[in-house]
Image (cartoon, rainbow, N blue to C red; front, side, top):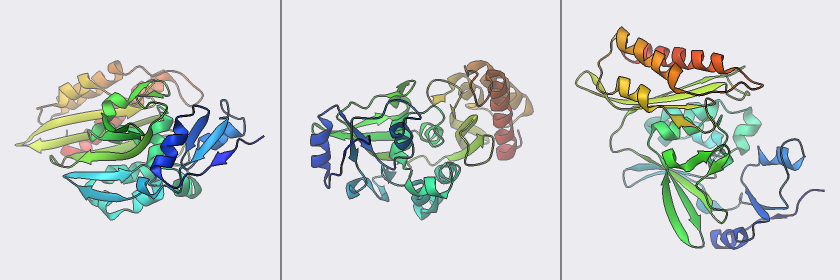
Amino acid sequence: VEPPVITPRTLPEAYGLLGDETYRPIAGGTDLMVQITGELGEPPERIIDLWRLDELRGIRIEDGALLVGALCTYTEIRRSALVGEWLPALAEAAATIGAAQIQNRGTLGGNIANASPAGDTLPVLLAADASITLGSARGEREVAAVDFWTAYRETARAPDELVLRVRFPLESRRTIRFRKVGTRRAQAISKVVMALAYREDGGVWRDVRVALGSVAATPVRVALTEGVLEGAAPRQTVADHAAATITREIAPIDDVRSTADYRRSVSGRILHRILREEGGW
């Protein structure tokens, strides 16, 4: 039996429904629909369809930040001129998620709230120092992406809150690179996904961020590896040290898609390749 679906037309209406814990919000439904069919997890009792909430759409520049609405689809993100100009790594990540049908329905907010450690866009949020705006009848609040995913499939979002938008600060514009390793380039869940951010300053790297998915219970940043690269100039020895550090720092598991050893090895190789392509490390 399919659960009943309610489609609010305004955010206040949606917030009122979220006060009832038997309701589950749905955006594009590309993950939740699998649960409804009984193939993965327990289906929800009732569904709140968010698709008509236009307040959650749109991509714009405001107050020194790129704002991406939670209901923006992967197709909209990869085609956005603003994303292409200011954050092309996010467009690259969106382009690797599923087939065209998934990209037309799947949303950034859904990828965030679903909290899969293999979510392809999530390392980009971490590398970009993004923050996630949550809203409820109590008001709005911002949570840094680095604090949002708290445990496997768990987040800082309260049951009565919705993901409204993502804020990507642009004040210190950095280069961000994205890489994904899967069975195929797209239409496959990631074995390892990585985003690396840096700002070149007088021949050395500053504000380094290295973030990964599919190597821990949540998307993670690797502080020790970032420390190796922070303030360093491109050198082969530094690249070797960083690649060796990342393989020791992450804690992947064996699962149906890959092994822990493979993920460690691939993470080191991906990082080494990005460094070589960026600055001749």
